[in-house]
Length: 445
Ligand SMILES: *Cc1c(COP(=O)(O)O)cnc(C)c1O
Image 1 (cartoon, rainbow, N blue to C red):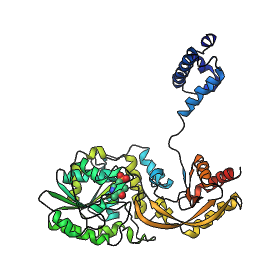
Image 2: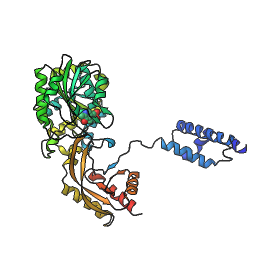
Image 3: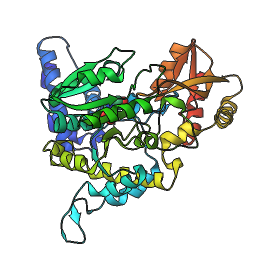
Image 4: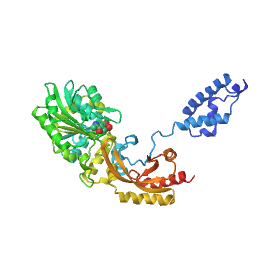
């Protein structure tokens, strides 16, 4: 019973030096809970005494935990550039800085400066984006999933949309075309087989309740042997002949033709746009390399109808998105590819990566690591099966143990053939010194 009487009062905690400069309300709230738990433990005879100083430290620990950042910067040494679990595309500091003028000030987000009255939020990126893509009109929503949803809901509610069975993809375990379609009110009409769908399959599926022919990019897998561009051209032609809409959900949007050839697996936006699709949509943060957004492009009359859908209000983007997106688009127009980190990482030559890996290897001591040539994937549901040459540092030691130790230091590597690798395809030059320190710390003991 004695111990119970010595339990400190809640406000006594505040006088302890540990809590100098802390939010008093928050400290008292935590202290109340901790002291009450202690009282119960004493009453139930689970414990017989307690240490007041230890209690104070426990309260401080709980207090500090509230300020521990949940989102932490990581060193991505997996080699996967568009890592869905690590935030997909990076934003360059330069672009963030340019955009901050708008983000940190009042802006003409919805204010028409010429008329001095209400303006249009979506006008801002549209001029730049129309120029970049060479399309009639554009619309930006929260992500590509919202773009798909808005398009289906606007043009195919209670009507049929014809899609090839080979394209009913699931992306990252959460985005399933058939599910999205159902929620949007559109009726899915699947045609063909998983590995082969002919234009005649689409043709025989068309009936009086058909609204749209839709093509979905096979983001997570690839089926060999036919040219997408031609297939879309045929689809478009069939749609036009039958007075139907054609829509291509691209998933990823790749702008440059040069200097990097992605092979025939990923067409650049300009190639796809030569077929004059009625509507396309793609993610802002896949190969396009900008913020999370869904970019819709196509015929002006269709975009106008999308803007009239009340749902748009729920999918609308913030000024942070719009201003960063505008900066990315301007960087594209100026061909400042170094400001699009996704492309910058993709364009690095193996020789350059090898040189940087050598530099890190030398700085940590000759015997800790060795340089290996390897291959990596793009990730993020783009360029399925397409491998990229890369250079990695093989950190010698037990792979599983090293993987955990590096992860504890916020470095995520990958294990290949029982070797722990740090892949330089995704290691940014400005973290190399920090990485060297971490390697030294881990392999040095
Ligand atoms: C990634 C992807 C989506 C979803 O895009 P988010 O921007 O992640 O919402 C939709 N369709 C396809 C084909 C995709 O590859």
